[in-house]
Length: 202
Image (cartoon, rainbow, N blue to C red; front, side, top):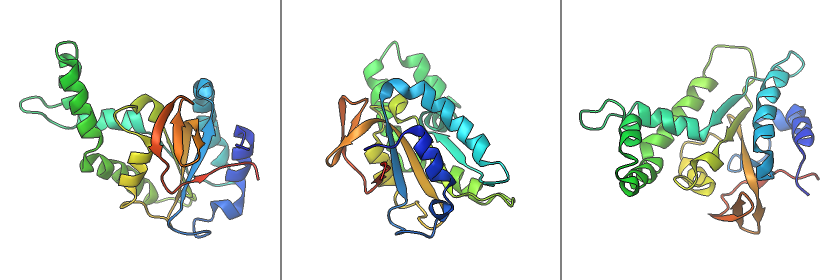
C-alpha cells in the first residue's frame, strides 16, 4: 500500500532513514507515488516539508530540484549559433517548426551535459559550509518534462553521478508503478523501473 504524504513526512523525520550509510549504496533512490490530480497539493507539501525539516529538532537542509525548471535553466545558458540562449531560440521557432523544436528538446534532455548540470547542482548543495544535515534530495517535475525525459531514463543516466553514501534521492512521481514499469499520470507507460525503492506503508 502506497504511503500517504503524512506517512512520508514521518519517514523523513526518522533518524535511521536520514542516515545515508544505511542500506546498500546502490539503492539510494526512493519513489513516492501519488495520484496525478494531487500535483499542486504535493508541490505545496514539498515546500512545507523543507521548512519543517529544517527546524532545530531535525536540522535538515533539503535540496529541491524541479527537473523541468532545471532543464529550462540548462537550455537558457546554452548558446546556439549567434543566439546566447537556446531556450529563447526554441521558443521563437516553436510555432514555425514544432517538430524540429521537439526533436531538439528530446536530444538536449538526453545530453550528458544535462546530467552533469544536475550533478553540479547537487554537489554545490552538498558542499555548502553549514552545520545542517543534507540527507535528502527531492526530485520532482517529471510530469512537466514528459515526453522529453522519462523518470526511468533520467535515473538510469544519472546513476554514474549518483553518490549513494552521500544522500538519498526522493522522487515524487505523479502516477504509480505496475510490476516493472512506471505509469505516468496513471495512464502513460514510462518504460521499465530503475533500481529504485518504492515507498510504501509497511
